[in-house]
Amino acid sequence: MPFYQDLTDENASILFWKYNEEDTFDHKALIEPENFEKVEHYHPKKLIEYLMIREMLKMLKPDHKILYKTIGQPFLFPKDAFISITHSYPFAALAVSRKRVGIDFERIMPKILRIKHKFLHPSEIAWTENEDEVHFLTVIWVIKEALYKLHPCKYWSLKNFYEVDEFSLSDLSAITCRVFDADFEDRYTARVCRIEDFYFAVIEEDHQINFPIPKESPF
Ligand SMILES: CC(C)(COP(=O)(O)OP(=O)(O)OC[C@H]1O[C@@H](n2cnc3c(N)ncnc32)[C@H](O)[C@@H]1OP(=O)(O)O)[C@@H](O)C(=O)NCCC(=O)NCCS
Image 1: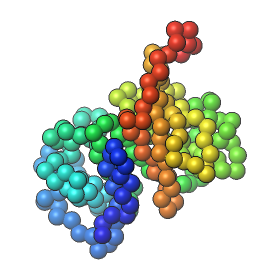
Image 2: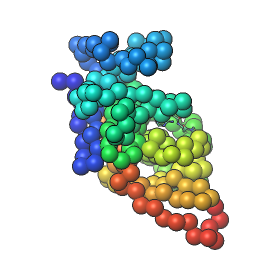
Image 3: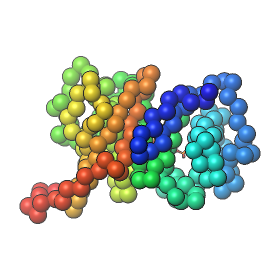
């Protein structure tokens, strides 16, 4: 079985695959002609990730292909659903949803401490500096990357425009978070789970609540 986990819920199909050396792929059938140039110089492991994603898509939508906008954002063709992709050998995950969706996973590694100043919002510092800091930071990272993939704004600074509310590591099932700037705030609920030594985040537009920013807001 190629599936490692099926995290599908009522809104989105979410498939997660761990590569096994016995897995084989029909390259010709799986690589979209439009993407030949993108993949022709891929490292073999990256190509396997790419093929796992296409194989999972074939299980969900056999007549569709994945194409890219110029910024690298993937979209389905025909465009009758939203998708999000994440991969890190030997894992790959694909989400297909009627609504916008963002997924991301990241290995739990202490080196995340070195870049925390680049992606932590000031409000997140106080409750993450403790003995579980690496876990908190990795969860915040996957949530913010999933928000980046989902949200049309595509703000590069995860520190200034993305914020995660305080949560407990013992319950990652509904973590509130937001994308915001001076003119808007879009709130979401992220679902995070641990898979081996990775954290995996799923955020779906269905779980979005919009709050208008009050006029006197400092942002
Ligand atoms: C694009 C980005 C989200 C990819 O994340 P990643 O952790 O490097 O890699 P992942 O495996 O999780 O995701 C890769 C997939 O994201 C998708 N992706 C790429 N650009 C995207 C975009 N603009 N919007 C949505 N999805 C995108 C692609 O499908 C890609 O896989 P593919 O090219 O094989 O199809 C990330 O590199 C990025 O640009 N983040 C922006 C914010 C940021 O990191 N700022 C720096 C703060 S310190």
